[in-house]
Amino acid sequence: MNKAEPEKMDLTVIVCTHNRCDSLAKTLHSIALSRMPHPVEWEVLVVDNNSNDHTRELVAEFCEQYPGRFRYLFERQPGLSCARNAGILEARGTVVVFTDDDVIVDSMWLQNLTANMLEHEWAGVGGRVLPVWECSPPAWLKAGQWYTLGPLPNFDFGPHACELTRPPFGANMGFRRAMFEKYGYFRTDLGRRPNSLMSNEDTEFAGRLLAAGERLRYEPSAIVHHPVQKDRMEKQYFLAWWFHKGQANIREFGIQPGTRYSILAIPLYLFRNLAVRILKWVFSVNPVTRFSNKLRVWSKAGEILECLRNPTASKKMQDCNATTRWIGAAKS
Image (cartoon, rainbow, N blue to C red):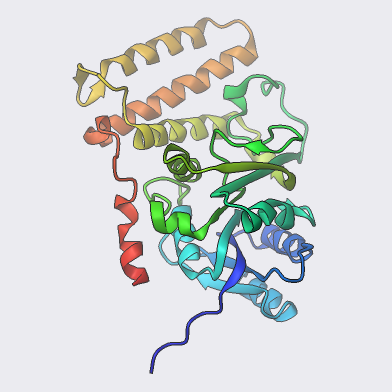
């Protein structure tokens, strides 16, 4: 007897989570209050990535309170990309939306984010991610110092919709499911995992679409509010974030084309860049500028370590789906 085909619908919202039961409850509650047109069929799929708190019980409560709206999926393989890929395979929607497990979404968020994808041929969409401060910003964190602000949840191009020329962020983005079938899934060598602040999995995938000529939309009316936790307002967190960002950049982009000279697979230009950043860090007088330069030092150190660990980094990956090809096989 053949297994029954899963019910198809318009939208699937994927929320991946790991041991964030308290914040997850607030996120799911805000999504449950979403205002959607009656003809649109939509669901929320919570992907539990090895949580050992009360995540399963929490999602069960939402499934009972909102029958047919919420579903639960357990993904044992650690890592945000693995969880998102598992969610895509399980999703029933022709449009797949992603958000984080610690945000609060506006009641019109989902409708505004997806309306144009349901009606027009946009490959994907990104909405606004606005930071919510749980404490006053420290003195060393200054607006305008973009390098310092990198770890903060902020994606805001203003109040007017437009076509995106840069990738959206994973906290507020959606794609037609067909884009994953055509271009592959999220790279599992990128993205958060236990004991790592590795990033770039979301922007790398959207960058693949942009490079292929697909059209992505910026929708300013689709707003999520992302907390800036007090425990992340520490210099050590920012330093660790930029160190792992340096590693992710090498994994995604490789080293500069035409590089000829290296030591232990580390291009000489990286040593030169590191030396320049160290000098600027040491001799900076302004404390804000000084810390910004220190972050650049940590980023370059991450790039150097990644080259040392991965001698083939000089060859930019031509097949971005190599690490997730097993997913396509699992689907058949």
